[in-house]
Image (cartoon, rainbow, N blue to C red; front, side, top):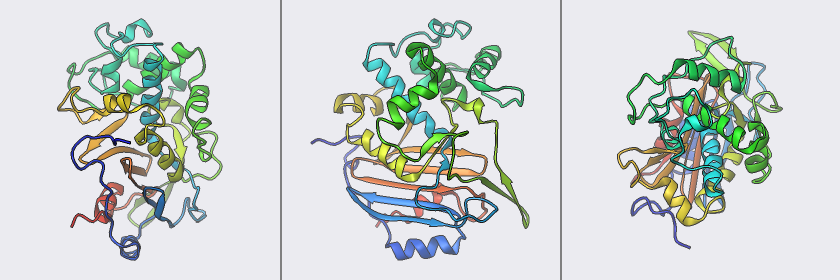
Length: 319
């Protein structure tokens, strides 16, 4: 089978420092979180460090992390499925579905974060998808059109479009098309968690637990919890053409469309990887993957000593 070819190196396996060196490095920076590395079918490393909360319950193999904007990857997949099923078009005007959105904005503009919509800001009195959409409509489009600006508003609107097209709640669509279909056994929405981390902030020597109940503002953009194994399972299904065929997958990640932009449909291009990342409420989860390799680092604790993506890059052997 041909592999996704973003450049000449994309189909190569990555090399990593030895596991014992990675372990020593993570311990040296007092890492709190989890790491998973897989080459082909072999899991090279899946290790947990530290605690999932300030009750000092240990992080375990299937612990769920707030995956935040990694949900955009899922939302993007569903939109691309609906395009494939001819239930909507990439060039449809968003106003066809959500009338009070500027008439020039297309579905593709939302997928690529180039809509010009005003940046989404959290208000405490906003709850649920419909109220979030109303706020986005009210704030309008005040930023330059077709200039990249990462904005939760884009994927919140995509979630609403999914609801309208499917005539089914967004949450139900996620279960039907993603969680149940790909057997993601440790993935769920923010109010369904059962083995989840809380965010841990540090202020001097004081640790503060951060468990938010306002994640209903982020449907489509980042209110799911997932285990690293589940993120791996979904990433592998995408990269190995089990979600879309080869032509469709290459169309989604093709650098030919809006060539200078490395973000598309919830995924970023990083050299010989596809990259997904979510950061919210002290959580930081990042994964790089291609057909051969998957590596992810997740932390639920803010630290001056490390960032999840810095750790990920540190343990890749570039020699």
